[in-house]
Image (tube, one colour):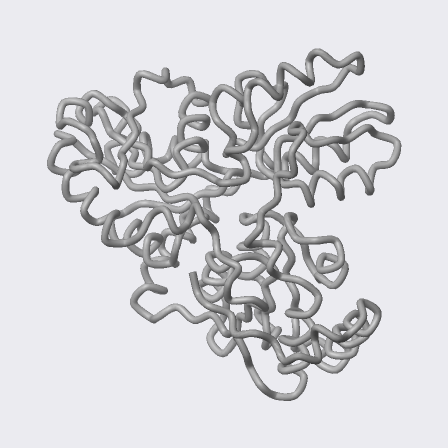
Length: 379
């Protein structure tokens, strides 16, 4: 994780109203030179200033479309800002208001470990294998996947990308030849997506980078169709099967909808499973007076409840499931970054070197080509 230097003392002394006024004044001054992208998990006071909001896939698409803005301020986490830099045009600058806004899941897979795993897996597989990385990964890991004829995915299109990895990644089609997919870094999204495609749990093994050869034998690799990296989201890991049972015991007719980064046992007990955009769409289109228990980040859950007052929306958990690194983007950091930009000084620019950018773009563009027309269920 990168380190963010402390902000000048004045930003801690400004009131919320003064911070808002400072952000708005900078936006007005920069005009069309500036685009602010905000992830759904951001706090409401930050989202209020976003030109566009969305999940990782939607924001990746939007970043690629912003060909005129000189500055793209990404209110998200580091891997998202990297993706924006990879997909944006030459001359555009991507800014992350707080450099410490990282992702624990992305940090669970580094390039050296991925390459070591690939060396073992390709030798042990006994046949073709295609790497797929969740967009929640570093640019270096995305480039590794691009170099090895793989693709990125998001929770919105993980099923499509895994199906491509098994069937369409090679000219001959790999399904009948025992073609395998190596999926990193989130084991839960990989397992839930494979199961949703009709593959049994027995077709899945988990590679643990802390163990020699990932804790797997060559035979286990040969027998598997999906090799999943031992990683997870620290937020969605907090949702449990016991919480679903507690919701079912309530008198109200709650439907349970969860993100596919949740454990398989949780997803199997849910009524619906889908990406952040799928969750937003489902609740937006749900009938008035419907009841929803949502297994995803608390800022989004609360915003869904606020935006749909005629519907009953609560968290699946009885604890606060907060993305603490996303929470680092706040009004003081946004105000500071924008005021510096408005004054002609670029701070916290996120840049990816040319070689990494080249191969990361290959993986990301494959992801965008396999984009569904509507947010997809993973169940």
